[in-house]
Structures are given as C-alpha cells and as structure tokens.
Length: 192
Ligand code: SF4
Image (tube, rainbow, N blue to C red; front, side, top):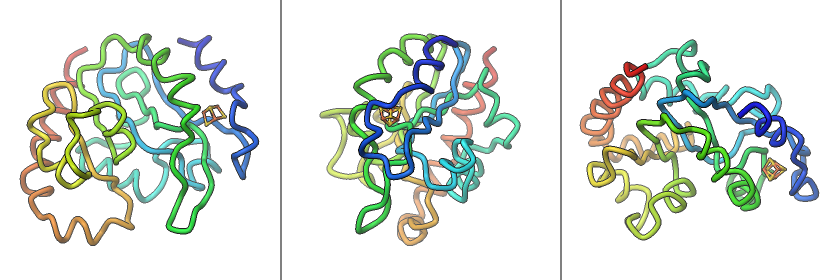
C-alpha cells in the first residue's frame, strides 16, 4: 500500500487540466473498515492537503457520528474521492472529478483494501461508478432507496452547505437514513 500511495502522490496524468496543479488527496490503509468515496477535493482541501477539511467535512462527520480523531485514522477510515486532485471551477460550481483518476488508481487501491465492511457513496459520481445500472434516476431517488444497496453500500447526498435546500425539502434523510447510517458506521468501526 505504501508504494502505491507514493505512486499516486507523484501522479501528473492530468496535470495539463488542473488549474492549481496536481495534489492528490487520499487517505487509506490495508486495514480500513469504512470507505468513503467522495467527489474531488475543494479548494480548501487542496490548499491544506487534508481530505474533507471544510464545511462539507464537518457536516459529514456529524452525519456519521464520529469525530475528527476517528475520521482521520487511516487504519480505520479510508477517504478516496473519485478524483484525487482539485479539478477547477465551472459555471455552476466545481468541475467533475477527472476521469483519469478512477481509471488509473481505483481498482489498484481497492485491491489493497480487503477489510472494508461498508462503503459510503457520496454524490452522483460515486453512485454512478459503483452502482451502475442499479442506480436510480438521480441522487435523491438513489438515496431514498438506500436499503436496496446494503450491506455493502450506502448512497448519500453531498454534504455541501450548497445543498441546504435539499436537506430542508427531504426531511426523511435526517429521520430515516441518518440513524441507519450511524449504526452501520458504528458496527463497521467496532470490528477490528
Ligand atoms: S486527478 Fe488523479 S489522475 Fe489526475 S493528476 Fe491527480 S492523481 Fe493523477
């Protein structure tokens, strides 16, 4: 795993398309039990080099019911976005994760993570990639059908503050999904 992470840190495969240059942000280990597959680093994450080190990360940790100490313990929690480097900004927010990243690195990383019990699919890119044809029409419908994807996966919306309106309009997420999510996370992390 260490050699693979060193290779990833040196990656410049799509450097020509990255406005701030390559800075892969990924956290993992061979013993991780919980895997979070997100989208791509924000500018804040790119700047600090720490995954989910922003408002979205604060919200995500609240959803999971875990603090920063557990969240950043690579022996227990793996943080692997669909794209490891900040992709730049488009007209309506950050650009999608670079496709090259999953093609180059994802299968190799997953092959080294043999103890993952639960994978959280955060947002449309992770859900499209991992659920394929089992994915519903959109993120809302896919998250609403979360029970269909267990025990291996739980699909989630992106915890960005930009999605505050979505959370207000879909109260079932807080009342129905989050209690199950917290219990599944607790169970996955309890197995050592
Ligand atoms: S986004 Fe992925 S493929 Fe592109 S330079 Fe960064 S690590 Fe390499």
